[in-house]
Image 1 (tube, helix red, strand yellow):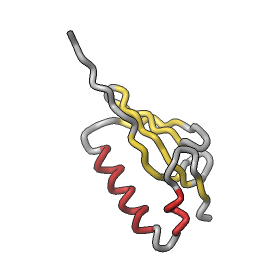
Image 2 (cartoon, one colour):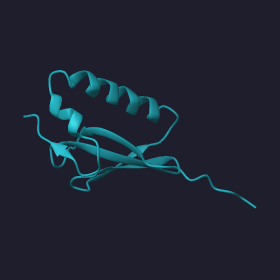
Image 3 (cartoon, helix red, strand yellow):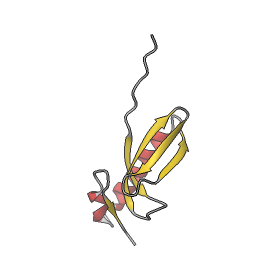
Length: 87
């Protein structure tokens, strides 16, 4: 019997290239690729999935955490669908 391991989506904050808002994204691995989805406008991007993706997401989160001092509204991006404009 083959048991497949369920992979939970990775939630992270970033700016969406379609709606131009900073929002919560959910990234779900699918084989050797992953689908990253903007939870505000549902724009989907396919990215290669490898062992370094989680580290890249953590680095981006650390960068945004540091920006919270200049843009405190970034702290409000906690739940799917949350979005802000920093322009």
